[in-house]
Image (tube, rainbow, N blue to C red):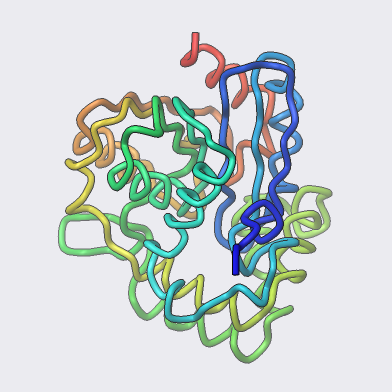
Length: 265
């Protein structure tokens, strides 16, 4: 049976340009969180949004816990979308863990990609010797336990921390609603895959020009991680955004768009 990738991944195509920007959302999110940013880009670019299987309005019946037990399964989603839409010369924009998903896809099928833009990326969230990832193993294990026992409680804790804004702010509430709308068991597995992943050893394999966007005060990814990525990805450029939190495309979409447009000139 033929799989309809556009339906499976809830693909949306907008924009007036010819150059394709393909957006990959982060953990606990979906394509709707890109809208504040794409408003600034859609006049000049063809924008393709999608939901990873298990997120947003994707086909949840297509979720396979074995396939998606590593980021390779999600990278295959990216490749599937590209091939289903017969895209080429794309610019992939990934937020958070989607940056590594895009990297894996670009390492596997470099012919499809011209540039990568990583927003708040991290190859490893765990502290490891001299490497500062931001979290200890026990902190991640506690996070996963909370997700399992009280999913809504986890969402109400995580959203203000990740946004670095008050609990009653509009953006925090928007993020919390997105978290809560996810399937709890799928979200927990994606969290485990995300926060225990370590792709530091593959950074050197990425041969696509890459822009790294790091918030000056990122509550999830320390500034040291941005510097580490810049040192280990061969053709990378690091830009520090003067903003707080882990979601600059929500909290500062105008600034984020400005940097992206400058890079793509």
